[in-house]
Image 1 (cartoon, rainbow, N blue to C red):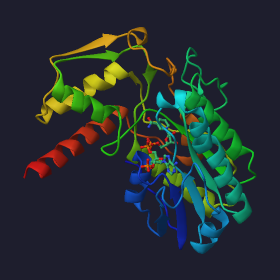
Image 2: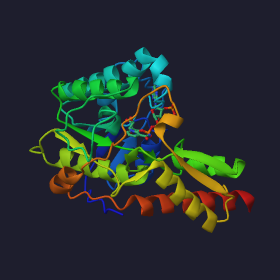
Image 3: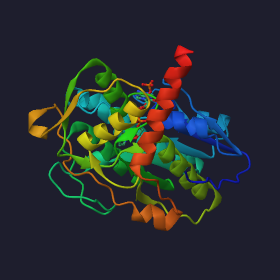
Length: 308
Ligand SMILES: NC(=O)c1ccc[n+]([C@@H]2O[C@H](COP(=O)([O-])OP(=O)(O)OC[C@H]3O[C@@H](n4cnc5c(N)ncnc54)[C@H](OP(=O)(O)O)[C@@H]3O)[C@@H](O)[C@H]2O)c1
């Protein structure tokens, strides 16, 4: 794991999406010297943001980390207005409020801004061409943050997984317990990213922005190291699951995307080139296999606690 070099006094970070995978991990991190304020959607509805200036002043917020998003990639195809409001309009409003308050904003974005049929690993200056409503709404959110005038970091990540919330690892464990045969897409390449590792990286980036007023704004890619397919990820999950005594399927078949049609098109190759965040912040996340192994172990330990 990365060490957080945060030595900050009296910092208060506003974290949106505190009930999501990355938001939970950030709250759990609680870097030394930092108070995290993470209002739920009852207080901070991203689809209809209240007056942010009042909140920022009242809580003495020193940085904003935007982890909230409309993340239902397929459902977004039939709710484009809502996806746009949460993923594009709200980040712009958060960033505008950050600009007025003179504080930085760290905004999380996605590998799904890249084309369905392009080839990775994608560098930050690679041309974007989102193939889905979700991807387009996130691309518009990036643009709104960049145009806001706030000091900002846009951090794109990919295939987020954790022991919390909803994600592919947890879905595999559930389906593995229910079915003997699973068919998993094996021609989409990407990198699973542990929400906890990403949260550590976001905290490091935020700390740099609050402690160094010369830190330039920009766009960075951040994912665990390595690459795989959804099928490769599933195989790793089940290998680890078997070691912990979970029921696993007898067969995990590799299938092409064409055999698993979904409402939203996804990039066939969404690998992110993460060299820039390594150069600028010294952030290098561990191999995805180690991260997923840890998640399965955490879920196994949680299950043991429930049984005991
Ligand atoms: N998940 C992935 O595979 C993935 C991949 C690449 C990039 N990302 C990006 O990473 C970031 C974090 O994703 P995640 O996986 O942590 O997402 P997540 O687990 O789906 O959590 C989304 C968060 O956004 C909140 N939210 C949604 N609509 C809201 C609204 N109208 N008002 C207030 N809060 C709202 C949710 O609150 P509720 O609990 O109240 O719903 C939840 O806290 C997002 O920017 C996402 O686009 C994710």
